[in-house]
Length: 231
Image 1 (tube, rainbow, N blue to C red):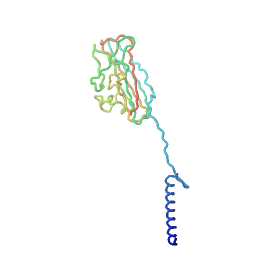
Image 2: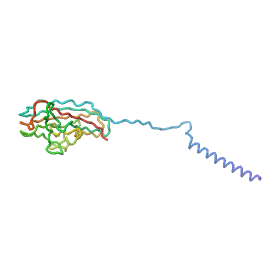
Image 3: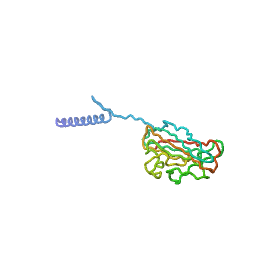
Image 4: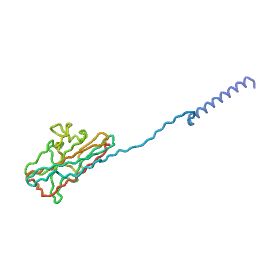
């Protein structure tokens, strides 16, 4: 073999060896862990926190203020309140329902006090409307909250009617009780709350000579508040 061919062969071998070395180094850098005098590796640590809702203060039993004469009639009111906390960023919804279709029933007979009947089926009555003599006694409620925006629109008013406006006023927006299965939404928030207070005011009004008649005794309504975090 001539010297020229030998030199050419050596050059070709050197180039081939260099290419192989470069390919090996590229593969090492691509597939082997990073090496060096200073390196970084970033990763995530995740923890899920679930949403919860709780009663900070449970609603107390209500004893209406004052007795009512069964023949000559009259009215009585009573209030209770609850305080709720929720960490749900979407807030929570509070509903009120009663254990029976006619909410307030006698503890000693089959007698009952009718549910209040608002003039409009779509909204509570801005003012309580008493029944006339000889008509039924009625039981209803209204709602207020520590933050007006939390009160369901049906219990807000514009100064003349309910289910509209931005006011919440004592003795306004009286609603009829509904069963637990068809519970009424009374409060709804749009974010997490540390302390949300809801006050419920109840009223019983008995006209003179009520019909149906009301035998003497105690009448009780069993109410259930349900707080649910919003989806």
